[in-house]
Structure formats: structure tokens, C-alpha cells
Length: 163
Image 1 (tube, rainbow, N blue to C red):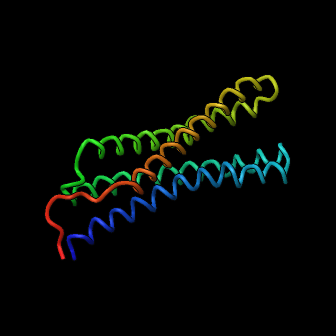
Image 2: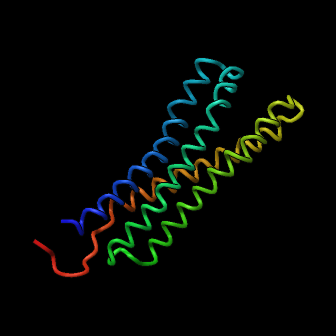
């Protein structure tokens, strides 16, 4: 019984962290942001979203930072799970973490500065905003791929089944 408990805990934490990450991207991009801009308009909506972004990216960075050790510890707790795919999954999580940190700490302030400079920086704002949208799409795809990989993954067969 106890030999199954630890991997189950790591799997649960990993799954929760991934769904928190991918779910927040989906919810914000397709649920929250469109409603904000439809109800508040471009000017007020932009101010509101600007206030949300630091928390949004902190949530994504925290979620990925929790998912990474959960994945690795889960693989270490079950010898049959070890292998190159763990490295691929860990690499994808690290990529997502780095994107979240870049967007939250570098890209978002640059977007805000371009917006604050007014119409003269509209082209710069559009370019930076497009980069932000593309990087968020990459994170969403990574999160979905990792969730699908978790869902279709098979339990390892390292020995005879226990009763």
C-alpha cells in the first residue's frame, strides 16, 4: 500500500499544478479577457487587464514550479517511470516556467511602456502584444500536451502485479 501512496501523491500534485497552469491560460484568454474588454471597453479594460497580468504570470510561474519537482519525484519514486520522456517533460515544464517569468518580468513592462508612450509607439505595442499572445499560446500547448501525456500514460510494468 505505501509503495503506491507516494507516487499517487506526486501524481496528484503534478496533475493539479498542470491543470492550474493550463486552466488559468484557457480561462483568462477565452473567458475573462473578452468579457473585460466587451464590458469595460478598450481603455478601462486595458487598465484592468494591466492590473491582472502580474498575478496571472505569477500564478503560471508558481504552477510550473510546483509541477516540475512533482514530475521528477514521481519518476524517482517508481523505477519503471524513469527514462528519457521524463527529461522531455521536465524540459517542457522548464520552458513554460521561463516563458511565464519572461512575460511577467520583462515583456509585460515593455508592453505597458509602449502603451504609455501613446500612438507614436503603436507599432511597438502591437509587436510586443503579438509576442505575448504567441508565447501564451505556446504555454497553453505545452500544458495541454503534458496533460494529454499524463492521461494516456500507462503504468510501468516493472514486475509482477501485486495483490
